[in-house]
Figure 1: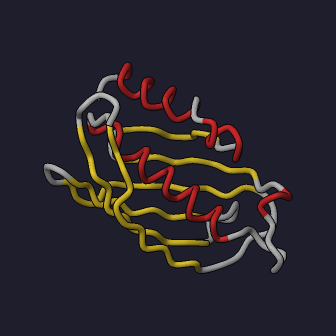
Figure 2: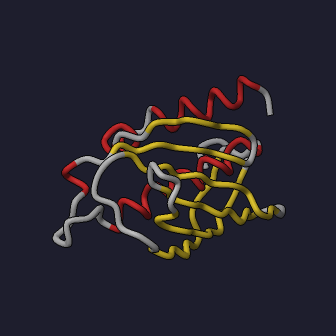
Length: 137
């Protein structure tokens, strides 16, 4: 994967309204691997006084989808996510990393991990993503 293609993936994600709304930060992007950071905002806190599980799912899904793009595919769409919530968090920064586990012609299987600032595992996710090379996919 060329540096130009990686820069396009970065630009595509960083220009997303959702990316900017939630406050994601890209730390590492390479073929088959992504590391994102997210500062916890007060708006993420639920009635149990912890970050809402939907934030976990959104950040993991974003990292995992982004991990599939540098393989040379324009379209990466989530088909299935299996998320295990392991520990809650209230503040600080969370880190979402995603890594390709297996790829075939039409799909890619990706593993995602969400950790706190101390490296403790907050959530573990696996997902299947449809991949396509067509423009606008």
